[in-house]
Length: 219
Image 1 (cartoon, rainbow, N blue to C red):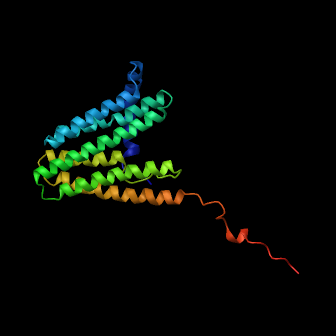
Image 2: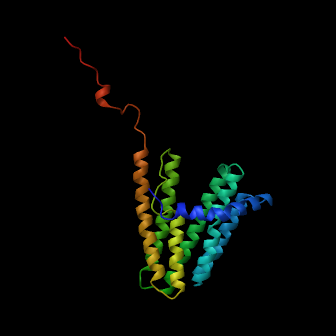
């Protein structure tokens, strides 16, 4: 299933990320350090959003979220991140996502937005966590759930557009983006579950019943 922006966005960003990744590695900075630093930056951006500074929050979160591409590039250049690096990256992503959408929930609740922004933010927060869980759980069971119309990058991009619209004085902008994220996240959950079901191998002995049946003797 094709993603919305992930492939073209990563292709464009890589032109700037690759030189930066090589530079940081030469300085002796590890991919794990970049992962943690990026998460701290996202937490700061989430705080800005919760306090109503939507414009700056959007740019800070966007800039720090790019470290998700940077640390992966650094790891590949170094020959792989290892199991702990992968675990740390996934854990920090969940913390960052929870902080961002949690901040939006707080902002929507305090603003009293008439467009159902608080409900949309809560759905987006919960569904986004389930999207990531389904993929991780499927992988642990030997299934493939690496599909979906809205993965993490897509959700953050759509939310960022809503944040910029909201900072421009359009009260409907952020709630509209949240409803889109919520809907696409729910769709992605079902896409992943269906794809995982289709990739499950048949249990031993569940082959063609006709082929397994004994051949009758001819007189």
